[in-house]
Length: 206
Image (tube, rainbow, N blue to C red; front, side, top):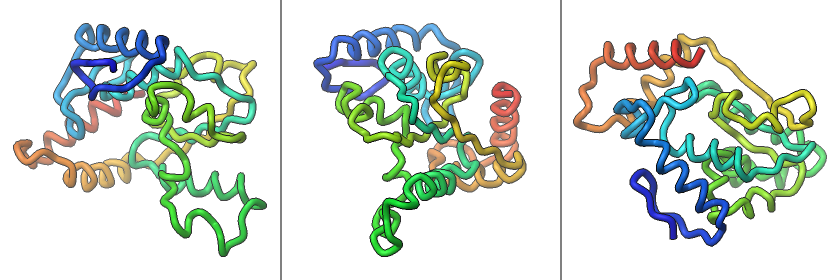
């Protein structure tokens, strides 16, 4: 079991994962930190303010993920249409695999059908879950493009990214309503604080 000051304990016998967990745990205290809106803490990592689990997910992807030529990554910023894009891409890829009567979306949400990459790379304490997904693998991410390894993003990679963007004003309204549902009770509900956080995030992530 790997213990951490920033994460719940993870059962893993994979030495490579244990090393990455340790490296991440040692890295986080050295990064600039700020109290988050949705999460307790955000860290400035390679130019982006993101939560700790995203940093660990990025490091695990860098260290252990083996891309396939058929991989498709659905990449979005939060509240920009992630669920819609997951459903659309999955339906296109599998348009000949299911009849309307037995389509998976009758019983499952798109987030269940298209795994969240930086979260599910943790699952099982190894890459076994992600490796076990049949090709073409369809994965979803909120990670910035530059945080992926070059073996996934350079000109020689056949790994494909499907990206969606949204009008920042609409993102603001959507984030405002969504974040207020998750807002800790002790955090004051003052819109100017939220505006500052959003503007700061947009500026830093340009």
